[in-house]
Length: 261
Image (cartoon, rainbow, N blue to C red):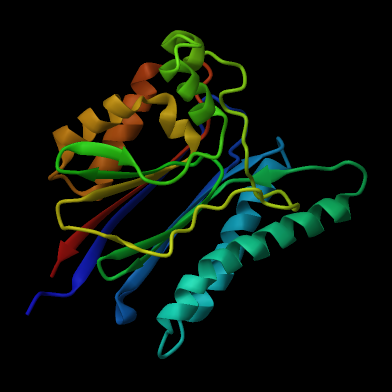
């Protein structure tokens, strides 16, 4: 009989070169039911707005998921349904907060959350916070990017833009979906889970992690694939800091590996 999977998880939150921290990241494990989660929220709206939005998203996520995972006999169907429920509750919380502030007060946040059930991974993603799978030496972003970046990159493939023009495009980071108290245009929440192998590495991040290119992230993971999650997360942060980009955004990094007892 195979041993019960356990999770090796590490989280890092870094302010980068910004004056305030508008990212939030959290994780919790429930050993009794062999389950857990990691969630990242990248707030926007500036001081006293973006940081509030991201915390409202994390709070809504915890409220929806913890209620199920803390029960004596968690329902798998209810757990999976809790992902979109968390998004709905986060959206409502942000809407209520904006209404309380009055005027034209606006704020929003991305949501990137994974639910770990044994070796299976379910996720929900709204915005541009990436979810990477590193498998067999190759890095893949497995969630949808709800920004203009994929549209602009498609123009490179069509020969309309050069790669340099695409990377410097002023609309590249414009979001096409976000949690901001209004209708959410796009939600990435697959019904079928991802099955993790013990050699896989999951990396969640805010878009501040993407000041490293995908090839750079892949190389770091190739050089550290047998390392603990905390060492992989630290290697990613050190690489970001070594770049010394004066515009470095807040960066959240979550690393998940599967271990066996």
